[in-house]
Image 1 (cartoon, protein in one colour):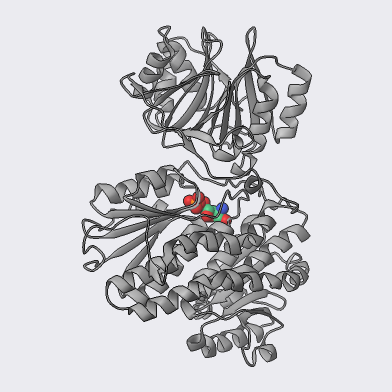
Image 2: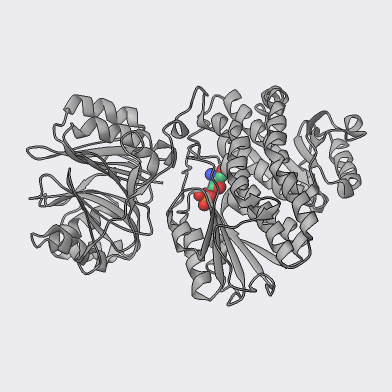
Length: 605
Ligand code: AGP
């Protein structure tokens, strides 16, 4: 997704803007640009990576201590220099950058063309610039308010306005925006890592607020133009958590940070064998709970699917798991008394956020499991449990996924105990097992060597299958997504029992199949499924608990992982699957952290 930075201070803006954009690269982009206010506003923008932009900026050398910058993930118009941000209005009144989608931009553009405005790009963003230009009344904030009243869709906008030489303005709706408070300089950014080198004091901008920053002041206005107090929060994140710390890729660092991420997430929720949630459900809500929905996208959705097996096993309440882009449009049967759980690393995923608002509007109790502090989904939920995984930079999620699993275990146990399906003693025993997971994850990371060896073989393939049953099935979906999204190998995650209903026709000599078989009760069935694919020539990589008997006779390779109670095994199963994806991608010489076409946070539909 697009990244925005802004700066007002005493130092040259250009290098600070470039550095800020580099720290937002993980959000995914295909062009970038900056605008610096000196004698006039100089715009430098270029297709491709930040390095391309940097060499153009070095040539132009724009001078000034006020500026904005942008990395663009193309939605409207090709990823080229014309469509790259910033965009200037026709009369040079405003220069701006935008993250989001203006849904009524065609209608607005046609009106502006009738008024004589000429457009250079195909973007919806340029429409915002021309609209501001057409409504400019000499006052930036009042003009911004008028512009916002006409826009439909999502936006975070930062802009330089004629006549305001030492200020940057901003507004947002549904797309993220934070203000960084420095000493004699202030910042704007889409996400925290961009401001970390300069400050950890920030203001999280809310929908419908309008921002004016100068080097010594941060002003916030409401939708009527009235000043509001800017409550500054200190972000407890170190720069190290946004640095590679010696690893070749952020994904590698984040895979190996998982023991700590899980420990930091679950420990605050467990005190002396009891569970302490950071918010309260309404009285008797869980006791009387009849239906649970879990709504998310991508890997977060796989956490939801995994949680379904655990919650239904322990809490005996039916769980419906939806991908957010479907939930929000299928007129869900949800209302008062229902619990709707939203899982999101970024806390800004557009479909998940819209689904949250849909569930809330229908009266459900909404809670979220989120990694990014103060993100929109976290703030809009009735209750939030943060995964303390730290900044996750790689597009392919790993430590946030594992931390989300940790919350799912704790929440399942909490609800089972509330419904008196789990005694105090059983709760103590289960929570002890949860607290033991970080050490077991550390042991599971020892599969690094075998996964690296096997990745050389997988890297030669165009297709791969992941099959499993029961709680291993959603882990197969996750293993499949991990591998395909960064190695570009086509993968399918499949219920092992479902394979023979069609897809087994794709198995031919040499097809690689990862068979995940950690559930004792389903192991015999898995043995049959492994034999079925092996008989057709598949190369089978089995992922099983240490001590599993007979597997070496039927699989070509075996990856052993530590034992844990059935419902906690996902935290261990996922480790070799992540490592297989990572090493295969490295073996193919691809950019592990920034896979093509992908964004870390999909803040558009
Ligand atoms: C996972 O590796 C992907 N990057 C993607 O599927 C991601 O899980 C999905 O976009 C949801 O993002 P969120 O957790 O920030 O809402």
